[in-house]
Amino acid sequence: MPFANEIIKRNNVTILGSGEKTLLLAHGFGCDQNMWRFMLPALTAQYKVVLFDYVGSGHSEIAHYDQVRYSSLEGYAQDVLDICEALDLQDVIFVGHSVSSTIGLIASIQKPNAFSQLIMICPSPCFLNVKPDYMGGFEKSDLEELIDLMDKNYIGWANYLAPLVMGANNSEKLVGELSGSFCSTDPLIAKTFAKATFFSDYRHLLKEAKHPVLIFQSSQDALASTEVGDYMLKQLPEAELQLIKAEGHCLHMTHPDIINQALRAYID
Image (cartoon, rainbow, N blue to C red; front, top):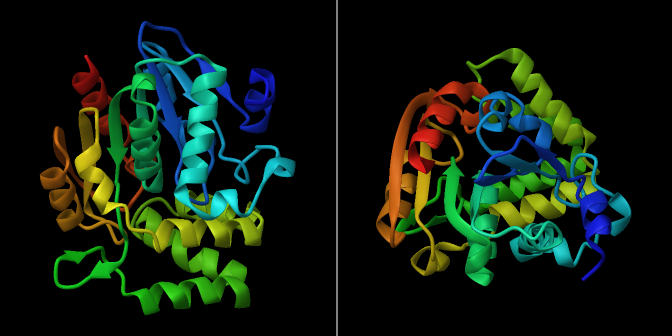
């Protein structure tokens, strides 16, 4: 285990606020900790909040990137566990956006004592359609085309994916910010993370969850349909689902006040 200060620097860890309870906020694919900024004022007034960037994202130290490690979500879960160990975190409330919901689930199963609750914003344990039992939303061939587009036209890929993720009818500024975030990520790192995100299937882990889970589901989400949320609710041992009337996959950015209010009510 590297020294705590190395991990803090490696993952660009930020600690804000103070309170008896600690929230660990984990960003999604192609994003960084800045995406949580709309929720922070309300959260830091009440809780200790830990933010970070996965290695390869945001202002993390790129020199620590290892393609083998980060070709699966377990590599990202190890980042989470390293941060928990470096900061000596216990009973933390993990808040994960999109794929980080699964990453948090992996980490929490590996080291249950570090966590107390999991909050998942627009999660999906598998983005693939696995007929006839499960419809994750995408055919494998469609996702392969999307990955191919990253090689052929990386900016075009970012400009196509951003409105799909954010919700085309949401703020153009936010769509542009997400596209810019995609573009600022090293293409090889983005492609490796994309494959780990979109081609994995962690449905089998849902039954192994050791903590209560709150799911925030968007009523119109091109990446994670309401059927996915219902599926997770049935599979998880102890879960609650809140359906938010909204468009897009980034409720923490488009509807931060609603998420904050429901999150605080759930925690307290």
